[in-house]
Length: 152
Image (cartoon, rainbow, N blue to C red):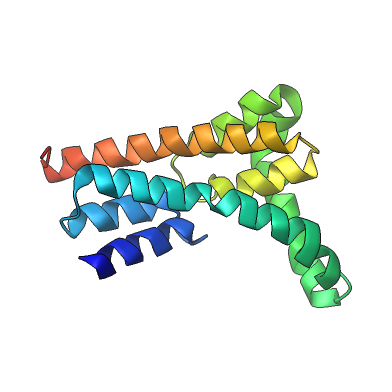
């Protein structure tokens, strides 16, 4: 059970699925439904401070290398293209709306990058990401429970 919880949390931190994959994994492995939600949500929220540290410190150091810079510009353009219109026009609410959509590429990683690129206040960006993650996790959690027919 501990290993399943750890794997669910690692999926929730991973850019390949975030909590959109961590929650279903936990529920499919018979983790308590409330514990699965809380742990995967908090694991996903932890991505924001890690990404901000990366963007502030590590990113500036690695931008000196051509291949990294090329990849970073590509990811920045993708984040701006996905969230750009909403974040630029609506700020906090646009970022929150972008992050809450439970689709690939609309999670906290892209939301953090978009907030960083558009110069949103960190506290507001964190709050927008957290609320968006909470709603996204709620949608994924409820739909997974309905699909499994498992309301323990």
